[in-house]
Image 1 (cartoon, one colour):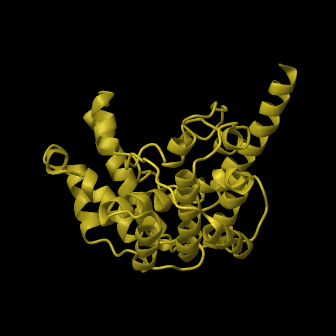
Image 2: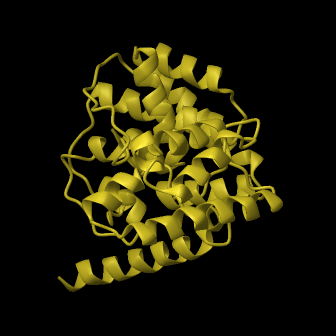
Image 3: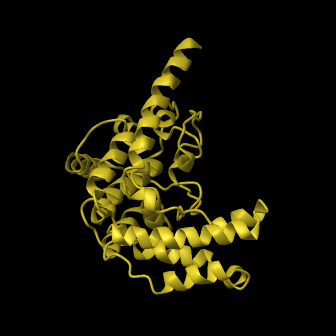
Length: 268
């Protein structure tokens, strides 16, 4: 029991350090996590309309401040937020309507990946280090993944193509969950859960994880276009366009999260 507590304390300290580092990067300008339909969540929890109006105004103000610091949403993120602001929401809230109008005319950045943000490559590297539990350059990781992809045997895996929670949770479903501090990961330490899991990945799960990680690197670090990313996902995983787009959104909304599986695909 003491060993478990000591291990948790060490993991928690590392996770707290990671979370504090994230606040130095552009995330602090982006108060609406794009993977969450917050208007629906707020309704389910009976949040007062006045509080939501104040929050919509805050989001708009922060996005304005973000642009001054050259922190700009990509087109997928912007569209996701617009999709949440349905007519049912905007007709009941002038603040929501104002935010929707602001987003409708919002100029997105030209590329999808984090590399285009201020300090984006450094931010992404911090995520890679955290989720993989190792320190490797993106170039070294890409080479390793491409070797694994060439050696991979065919296989299929069943995936529920939904955005919440991240897809990596589905590939860890058979593992004992290890507690974590990051609310974005459902307060689960994905890296610890994966590294201590005794369940062996199937060929299909391994192939899915390798493809996700390769596209993750491609989009966020190596400036892959949406077309390149979609083609890679569709060709390697035999996905249709809609399924591939859900996986791409998962990669965009949860950068580097799939690298929690790195230890599992290199050891299986």
